[in-house]
Length: 395
Image 1 (cartoon, rainbow, N blue to C red):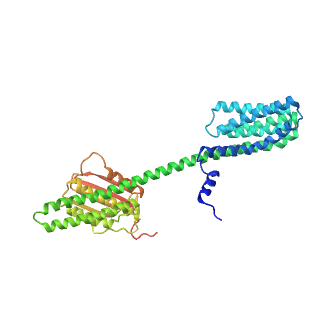
Image 2 (tube, rainbow, N blue to C red):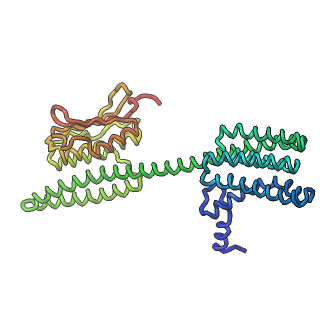
Image 3 (tube, helix red, strand yellow):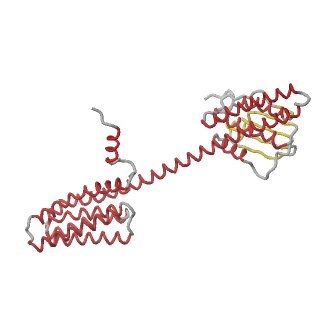
């Protein structure tokens, strides 16, 4: 017989999800009670001693009062410190108070109360700084042995290993909790950085895609407007080209958003020829490039560089001629595939690199490449390089 989803949901809310941060205040309270309640087993000996009636009425009342104060101070220290840490001075005062009260109860009530030193050791390991805890825990064990000489030497010797182990175990638990918290914070930071990087990638892709396509649409729209009165057939051809470019731009944007688009250098070379010709720029563009051994990421980076360079030539430079070259060069950094785009224009306006060149630099750096762009004697030149194995070299 299957249970309804609502019953399963209620049961899931009542369980404690181990390994996950607390979801509510109730969840946090349950975890604290479970963790602290485990250690209350060591109170069985003092409680049994008081319940036996061997201390008289005044002694029993005093014992119960002392035990209540000890447990209250212990819970205040450990329970409170598991949330917002107490001031360091108050922590030290409470630890010393627990040690003194445990000593007093043992000396006045007998060896049954030696288990209180386990709580003192736990408090030292859970609340003191690591270096201080390494001294305080053995000190607690030593104090218990000294008290044991008066009230029960054998019982104290039986407990000394437990006091040491339980204290040092708490230091390990505390370090584990702190590491877990730091890992959660680091994971959140990594997720935030990944989201930021994805936004930057999308911004770069949209800038490169829409900048190129809209520039081409603008140029062809101007041509269609000039041709419309005297050459309606040619104007209609330009309008058809505008429709084709618009549809391709829409496809490119969709692919860029989904993260699957990798532009190809051959397609960008052909597109560069079309864009430059439409802008009445004399274009010298190779029909193809030797991409033997070049990784797809490197080819994609060069394709983006070519698109950005041609877009800048068409939109900003005022150039009448543009030369595109794709060559293999041997440099000090090893064999490189070099893309060079040179025009005789002004290189556009502005005193610094724009968003496009900044995005290209980031793309090329990711694949181990470089970008250099600037005005030269006869115009403006952009040079992008990516690592490429020498043609014919073995693996």
